[in-house]
Image (cartoon, rainbow, N blue to C red):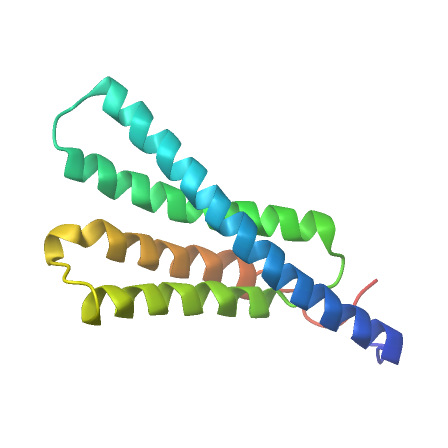
Length: 138
């Protein structure tokens, strides 16, 4: 395994910082669009149990946002730390869960929020943390 040069290290650093920004933006946009699509398409089909529709829309939106962020980051950046992007999504999921528990008067009827956070954490782990290649390759 070749030792990366200073220029290659710098490329990894700036691409990682840019990937964090892009992943945050694309992830949120992907979650909003996917959640709205799932929610409204299900509401057109049925009006029974809107909490269940909201639950599955939240789960689908969380997964779609993370997948969209991975796809965009892979297309835009050749060398970036995928584990740093996982850290971004993990931080978001944990902070969102803690916010719901301690600051917002939510109850367990709002389980879709916790399910979305768990989905974001699990999907980002599987495609960013476990998907990172070892070593530095061109």
